[in-house]
Image (cartoon, rainbow over all chains, first blue to last red; front, side, top):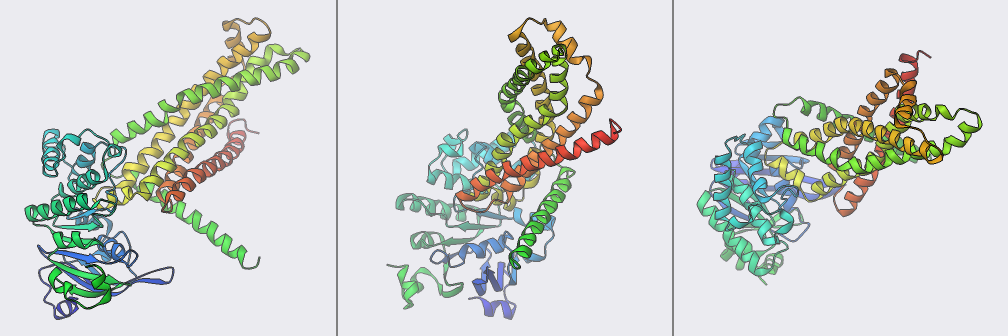
Length: 253
Length: 259
């Protein structure tokens, strides 16, 4: 699972390096000594049932959860060792698409998209902000929703706007936490294809956490299967399809 | 009992510790660059303007009821002429600030607790944090400062409405002109009555905003967490208001009235 690469020191093009990561909640181990590499420009999916530690892994990557042991390096920086300001600086380069979209309820779509531009990039030119917001809305095909509130949007639209809010910062890495959860199969496919399109356009490295094989097949070049806090299989869609592990096979049924 | 007592005191101590840390974070972020003026003004509008009708009605009814209830006793003592002064002093010094603060604890603290709690549950606060923005500065500093500034304004408004309520009260049983009523009301009132009352309202406002934000910001996940955050925000803010009031009464006696 990339451990050999890490220990041999050939992970130079890795944007995310996880080595010997462990995490427990109330004495129950959730992550058991996991190792992972995400290379620059790569799209990697982590597949697994609910409650296997997938979301905990990406929350450790972004520094929302502190691990018990091991090292998480993002763009060469040890996340846990970073001071507040340095962590903020790093987070600007890492986009995060939350499971429920996490759009700010009290703001319109336009304000949601402008928020990181004004607060993080400190842009003040209203014309430039509006232009960037409208450009990104056009890319996710939701230009007509600019003045709408999140409560007026459907689940699929919320995911698209959340993706737009992530992309507007032009991040180097994008972390997707269950991007198709709660969506019907057609909308799931649309979102997966949109993610693929955006990956090709923005050339950001992606880590997609999902239990949806269809989404993983569309969005990822390589897949890792997680079970009970450890990775049990790795490979492309075709390679995993041939795997005889029961848990891996379950995703292809 | 031997086991639960230390565990309980541990829980209380860690709750106090968490609030002290949150206070430290709040103070640090107040003075950080990039104060959110627009959000602060929006919060002043929500806390102040939107609470105005409730505060006005409460103040008016307080003044009216105190007058109606005290009038017969004062009349039997032949002191009905002092009713306006009594109403004015009791409302301005104590009843107005405390009742208005408790009403606002119910309306504002629960609102802030539920709003931030729901933002926490739906990962909106996490989303702000991972985007590199500062959720404490945007959500907490603005709300706490808006409450600190607006509660004294609402208290003054409530006091004024209570005086009008008193005016209606004295006119139910007889006829007192507006000039005479207000003349009597302000006759025995001094700056030393108003100043400590307004000062303690700032602390009440701070307690309302701070407790609401603290409970919401650290609400446990799930819909139950939002309800708990709103509920405990009201209970804790009300408790703090009573404690601050008791302290303020003692300090006012020592420093203002030199008792």
